[in-house]
Length: 255
Image (cartoon, rainbow, N blue to C red):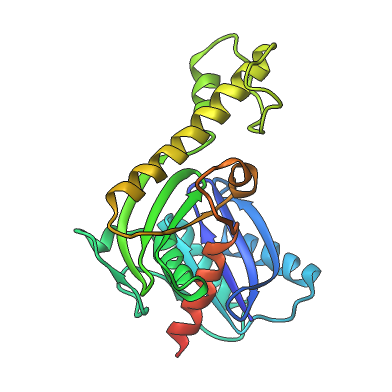
């Protein structure tokens, strides 16, 4: 059983994973709140005690925020019985980064590749719906072929809130109708459906350009359960693909 931590620019997702894909507990924390080692140890220690899953045997970090990584390494070392691994582009994992600058590939895309290879074993397009929306092209044998990075799904709402004086802030939820009859429902519809059609459109373009006959399209990330059911191109929804990839990375690095 491993403690896995996915540090994004906005949120940090923490999970306890048994094996490769048995999620025992998970939590979402704000990455934007600065914390010391003591604060992280107190917070994560309390969450682990409440979950009562037992003491993890190792920890794995995938982080795009180096300052948070530096704090988490000693934090997790005090909470687990074994090593703490940090996933990087040069980590010894059974995947290949077939892009022009492999060292710039984010750890989330690396472990998504690892998870897709292990869990699906087929050509996959992983649509990660988080702070940014990323489209990862992953072959059946674990080669990351590149992809697309687009603004996140909440970007439209945040832009409208900052740039307009009278438009209200609304929650990003599926609207009941396309045609809104209140300002709030007009905004919800515009943001939701423009993002929805944009995601489906990019997937269609990828499929047309990528020389793979039948890629498996998987939605993951924080907005996967909100948007995934409404996406025509998505065949499977797995919100925790990145956490599973981190757990698989921990097993590989330990071996």
